[in-house]
Length: 529
Image (cartoon, helix red, strand yellow):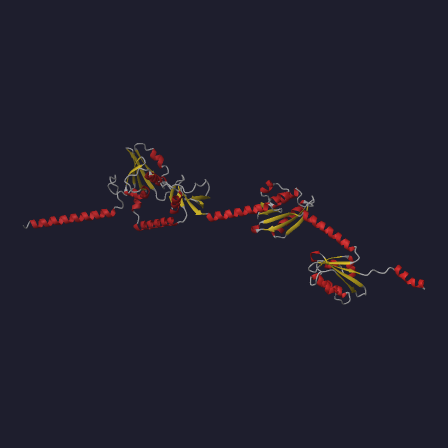
């Protein structure tokens, strides 16, 4: 009785302790296991190193660390025989072990190798590859595992937080960003890049990631590419930035606004070109370096310069030199004075003060003007005014002839425009009123002329009537009135309306008596007597 009680107590205590230890072990085992190991896995215990076992390109098994490494790419199935896992693993490892594929092919049916990652890798790795019985085993480990085990937990947490911030930053970038290795394979992409793939591809997205944009031409660091999204076309400016570790980071910034602006500018320039092509005026626009930047066909016609010469963008002096050789510029006395004159042309045109009339040896006449343009540019405008000058000369000759005819008349003639300005008079008018009409031609108003007439005549209302007829204050009609001058002579004033609102006022003095007639008249009384 006394012996059984202690024995029962001992057995009870040992059983309770065993149950407690079992529950504690189960709790610890469940809390430390981050992933579920697939059934029938070759890895019965938790392995800290990523290990992959392949049969050909079929993934047979992985360690939990390996599944955490590429779990998103290979999915959750117990076996993966569609090649996705092989592509994902090879894509991940090839970026760090460039000659991995060749080394694995050299293993044969049996053998093993150990590879170190590239020297410029920030976190160097070691890859152990072995083949046995047709199965390929890949084990990835840290090159400095001892140092890794000595990391401070606070440092590890800081690194993890920084990595999380960088991942969220990459996901929030609103335009595509991706990274390519030396072989042009996409090894990383942000969310915008993946979204673009989903919007432009009907099939699924595998590994390695497909291209969203065409490959950039070798040697280029930037170019423009378009992306077709159904009926919508988007434009992007792509820039490449090598990271110095054998990979290149690409940024695709939207360029729709720039493309639209360039298209509008191109259409505007085409409209200008079509407009310039129909202008009879020669136009030459020079940039700030004084090279020909734009010209129209009329320039070639007026200067007799070949189009191939103009398309070579000659300088201002080269163009003027060619015009001199083709005699489409006034012949200078000597070359030095000509060069000085051309320099003055450039200086005056830049200030917007250059305008000359060139009389060419062949009889043609050009009006040449220079106009400044923004950013130091300059425009040279050449107009053929040969016809205009011929008409002006003909008009001047006709005007001189008409003036000669008027000067032969005995009556004083004055013609006023609709606004009452003296536009024409003859010599008899100047002699009668004692002033040169050329001094008042085009500027003599009827008011001042009326005052001039009134000062040399007796008071009369005739001058007011003439002024009213010229300015339209009275009914326009033909009428005549006599006026006595201060010297006693009688002047007959005749007002006659002309076309275009003009009015002609003529002044006639009485004809002097014939002396012979007067002598006969004096003798007749004596004959009657």
